[in-house]
Amino acid sequence: MPAIWILRLSHRVGRDFRVTTHLGLVGRAFGAKGMYYSGDKDKEMEKSILRVNERWGGEFKVIYTRQPIKLVNGWREKGVLIHLTMYGLPIDDVISEIRGLNKDILVVVGGAKVPSIYYSLADYNIAITHQPHSEIAALAIFLDRFYKGEQLKFEFSDAKIRVVPCEKGKRLYKGP
Ligand code: SAM
Image (cartoon, rainbow, N blue to C red; front, top):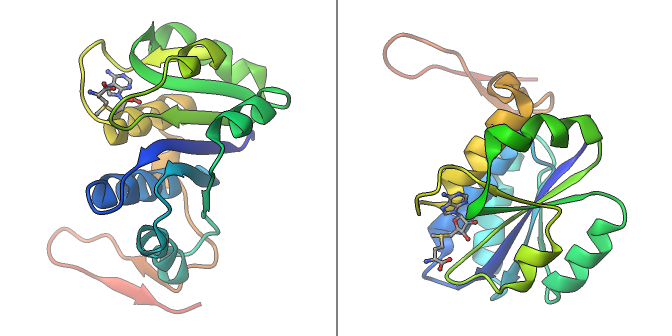
């Protein structure tokens, strides 16, 4: 199975704390290997994601990059570069082709304003509807379509706690 990584552009300390944290949490829960981010370095945001690994398992990585363009150029030599944007091609028109490439994927999501170079460097500019909405929603839908819903069943073998599904209330299993 190809590895999927995320690149979150232009993170701003304070203002983007929740959105970038949630990008990481959605990426982790839905099967991505890790998230690079550019903009402001933010140790608190990194910790807020990595703390989830400790209890809920997995090895999701959060890596700061000062040079996102260099990262993207390096990635294009070995894998596929996807940029999520409302101006791109409808996801359902290209997702089978992307899956068929069987290559590792870097999914770029924007912040306040995405420099135009990302549109030209991307192998695929992909739209999740052509309406403006949220990078978190766009990432979740991309991963859902890519994994055909299988990500809803992902489990972390090293989890210290797990949810025991129940109709009402909350039940947790704590153990090996
Ligand atoms: N006003 C901002 C701008 O000028 O780019 C909107 C940024 S939007 C809140 C942040 C990111 O969400 C975008 O860069 C893109 O990655 C993602 N996004 C938002 N709507 C999308 C859509 N319809 N399809 C795919 N990605 C979308």
